[in-house]
Length: 375
Ligand code: GMT
Image (cartoon, rainbow, N blue to C red; front, side, top):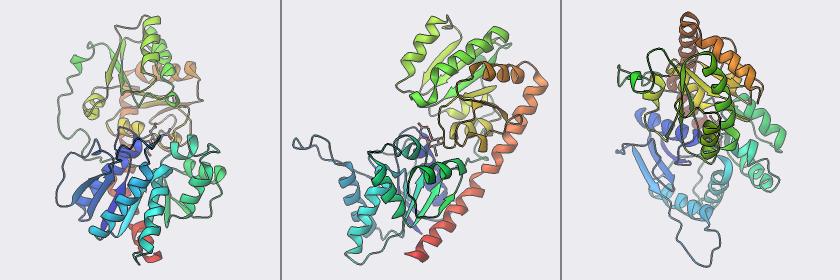
């Protein structure tokens, strides 16, 4: 099949999932075309099966806001025609499903019928999409997709609650390449980050408000009072400064390292003992799954789809959003004993394997077939 994928190219769950999906599809013989405004961060190699088409929005003084949807839908029309694309798969409803629908309609005028699969990732629904301002456009785009998928049961429930949806929504969970995890290196070099007697706690995100960065630091503050440990903060975003300030106020400068964005997540997780994810909302929690596949147990909130990934008492623990005392207690319970830590690590890797890319990508292929039949 020839598949066009539209996504956000930046660090962030939806872009990562879309990119990894495209790479996996290309390895299964499909021809994949990424269409977005920048080469996706995880897309290292382009070859005859993977193409990247950049969407440019010409700067024009008349426009107060540059019309990205317009540029994207025009680009889609051109690429779909030129490369005879069979399926359009858009990740994130706003504005991708909306632009995709416009492209579909323009192509219809030329008797070209392209089925559109829309994957909902979370913030497009729970945060941005539910804003009354965007609701009509989001409902419309979802209802006019040929196939709609959501990355968790929880997100499906939220979508049906927040929007007037007339379409079936298929749950296709996010995935991870189990064979790739830890395959590239064996020496974790943990001594670069912590002393031998210290545990390493890690948080990875885009440091948006929804990630509750202050909770991460407050939880760690309580952990290190009981257990010698270091905290690694990986990622960039608007709450980084607030986090750094809190670290100074709590006198934790020697114990907390802010590493910025990284392309070496596996290496960081290789020497991590615990992952903290206290998010306010999380449709799935891909970062938790990435931790788990690298044998890192997760202490998290029970928001959204996280309980579908992090199994309470098995791969880590769940607490109510904002309950930092409970999260700290759970973290200490895991970290204070080598035997318990080993068991949680083992469980985390085992449960993560259920989300292996080889189990999930065929589900998308089946849905593409279904969409083609419908179109
Ligand atoms: O969490 C973010 O801020 C990034 C966001 C995105 O749109 O990339 O992530 C969402 O999609 C991921 C991939 O499906 C999910 O794993 C995240 O849970 C989800 N984030 C939220 O729902 C807040």
